[in-house]
Image 1 (cartoon, one colour):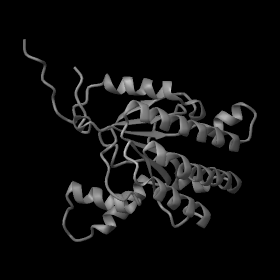
Image 2 (image 1 turned 90 degrees about the vertical axis):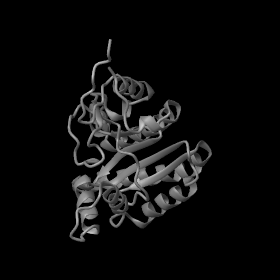
Image 3 (image 1 turned 120 degrees about the vertical axis):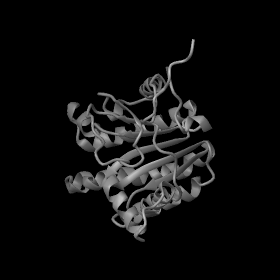
Image 4 (image 1 turned 45 degrees about the horizontal axis):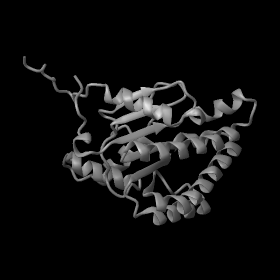
Length: 243
């Protein structure tokens, strides 16, 4: 028996992807890791196209974690330039396709040119209603929860709704979005890596060995089929149908 998710009941679906394996993809081909990040950008563009076609309402992509600053400075710099170019392209391309961009995570450590490209893309796409695309950049799930808790220090336990609002403010998300229904991680690893810890409380998880630059609509459709075939109980007991 297949149950229905809380968001699906209202025609909503939130899919999140940990985009892992771009560096390994490049290394396996004798290329610099930066080539993998460029190929990963193309995979992100394909995934957005597929999400629009599949009726996904919210798509959250984990692009750069707070811990990724510890990587070699050259790789970090090249990766951030890929992001900057991507956001410039988003500002020009996505408004006509109904995609609304929101970059979540810290912004105080980003360079002024990158921050300007983010803000311009968010302004240009703010009317989009077909898909909310969230890019997690300089993001840490633990830090987000700590920042949200700090905002609610009043001596009383917050309601889940109040905490969601504080969490959205802590990561520059604007307003809360539904919890994640389906979490996909590419690259063969099977862990959350500090991603969306609160929002993944009841997420269905699909781990694939496919390296991120090879991810495409077929991979996303396969994960969606697996998701729709699962029984989601949210801690409840689903009684067998009578008869």
